[in-house]
Image 1 (cartoon, rainbow, N blue to C red):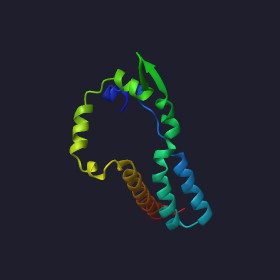
Image 2: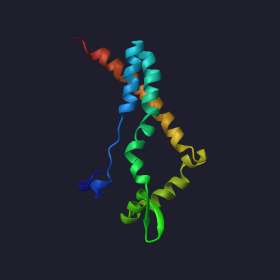
Image 3: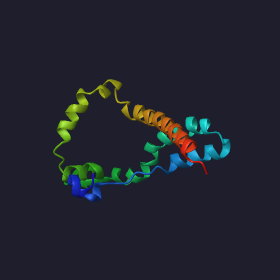
Length: 135
């Protein structure tokens, strides 16, 4: 959300990058020339590289800072400065939800689900392009 809609400060909103996954997908399409292999391998890499591809963006927020004698990360400090009212309710919903049963592996599961959805969407949009583009 942006400032005008959810009143979330714009300096806390960071972009995400899809460039590493897109480069892998384009490289696989260039090397193989096969849409099915590109969908399976390239789409998988596109989904799996999204999370580690954003580490350089969020890396500076993990730098240590001492605030009033307490060692914190910059992400923790900005989280303390900007109080989010929905956080306890959201944590309670996550605690009751089905992702809790995966025992801390939710990031890995979400990455593989993103890879599967990327494979599927590559096939769907390739088919739409093949069907509707008559040039």
